[in-house]
Amino acid sequence: MFGRQAIAVGVVVNLLLLAAGLGRPSAEVASDRVRVGLVFDVGGLGDKSFNDAAHIGLVRAEETLDAQISTVEPGDGSDRESALRQLAAAGNDLVIGVGFIFTDDIRRIAGEFPDVKFACVDFSVGPGDPPPPPNLLGLRFREEEGSFLVGAAAGLASKTGKVGFIGGMMIPLIQKFEAGYVDGVRAVCPTCEVSIAYAGTEPKAFADPTTGKELALAQYGRGADVIFHASGKTGAGVFVAAREKGKMAIGVDADQFHEAPCCVLTSMVKDVDVAVYDTVLAVATDKFKGGLSEFGVKEGGVRYVFDDRNAAMWPDGARERVEALSAEIAAGLRTVPTVPQ
Amino acid sequence: MTTALLVAFVLAVFRISVPYVLAAVGGTLSERAGVVALGLEGMLLTGAFCAAVGAEAGGPAVGALAGAMGGAGVGVILAACVVYGRADGVVVGVAINLIALGGTRVAMQYVWQSASSSPTIPGLSGGWAGAAGLAALAVSGVAAAALTRTAWGLRVRAVGEHPAAATSLGIDVAQLRFGAVALSGALAGLGGAWLALDNHGFVDRMSGGRGYIALAAVIMGRWHPGFAALAAVCFAATEAAQLQLQAVVSGGAREFIQMLPYLLTLVALAGVLGRSRPPAALGRNV
Image (cartoon, rainbow over all chains, first blue to last red):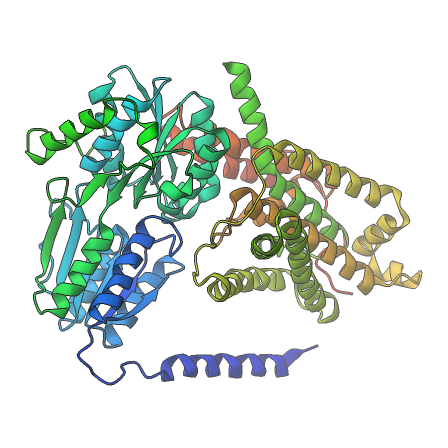
């Protein structure tokens, strides 16, 4: 009944939208402001952890270094590659992909745009992989070390002897968190039980707070009184459960104390914001070098949070023990496993 | 210990089942009136978004109302296209779902400057799970009674079986279908509102395929609101079991358990649970 006219109108509207998108002037007047494009990971802005940390670093670069920033929150898998490509082609000096999931796409696009600098947070390296091209910087963190320290904190703080771990997507990266955490718990409390759960096997497992809440409630229901989450936005559900039950939780990637002020024992902070800012600074001062950079306890790239807000939740002497373990790791006297035993 | 686990499991089932049950009941009404209920997913998602916006502005009650209205609005659009525009219900339903997906992202960007999540909104605490679960089941009972015992229900069923005969008796087919689909939208929107309020926020693509599973529940329940609600609770139970069991099992068994809800769907739709006959005029425009 609406028939052909409707289809014609639809086609015209789509063409207009397309033209509007393409016709936007891509690069403004070339200035000495460094132009940075950043593509977020699954879960996007507002995950209160990983992506937000990257955003904080980027905004700091905008304010301090007068960088011109643009960001993209991808909706689906294929959006990621086109977002990277779009930012590279739009005249940005530096394009950052936040998350391991960009590894393959950013390698490929770095090859296609040799004049643009790229950085990838949590760049993943397999055993047979070639080194990254000279215009690509892979930023890696030894999350297992930070997870070890919060595991020790959990083991010391737990009154029931049961703790939990909730991961997002079941991949080697998150299993690093699991491995370090379990090792840390066992180091201080060999008899403690650790429940492990993963929200899923696809990237959307990092954006599923409903499942996070269910898994946390299940673990608290079994007697766990501290849960460490490594699941991005899914963790928001873990904090809802923690608030409801009045049990403790441990945040990840950023200081997540404000998520549940009653109950966040500590957070495993990954200095993603520092890494992003430092990369922009390097590009702005012409000191960018491609390759791989790794940050662990020794470099101060991963750490746990202890301040007067959460100190009351830590038992006496716990802080000193965790600090001692931290010193051991920094001195190279202790290696933390990266694979669950 | 086991009683505590059982209680936790039952509460989890209640909590998870609310969107499934409400969407399934709405789907039943729509399909009984002869309109394919493929837009449930979009209605759920829009309801969740509107509820988040409403709750941020005025608290959970306003959020619930806003969610129902948002879902009803989507239902109205679907109804207009199918009933008055005589478009194919399947195509319009899929289109509605796609528009809801993209539309909520665009709207989110304007409202919260993030195309992925809303800030934390005042929602409902976990203590509401039992009440909400029972309320959803009560709604299904009311819908079943309305469908079988009221004049309106009789007319809706007539319109879904043989619209030509209904027209010859002076029943306004278009108006009835319109009303049924709008109502289904309101119910699914309410289900979506629960999702957002329970989660204390809206997340991109939060409906997660629940609308499609609700449609499977409709078919499994042989287009009867009460049985569809029961089927929806079954799906919710497998999902709850999967989440609770993850802590107990590991490795391959975990993946198998995660597959259970979908396995159940396949089994149900393959007719293992008995043949079911859809309304005769389902999907056909008069």
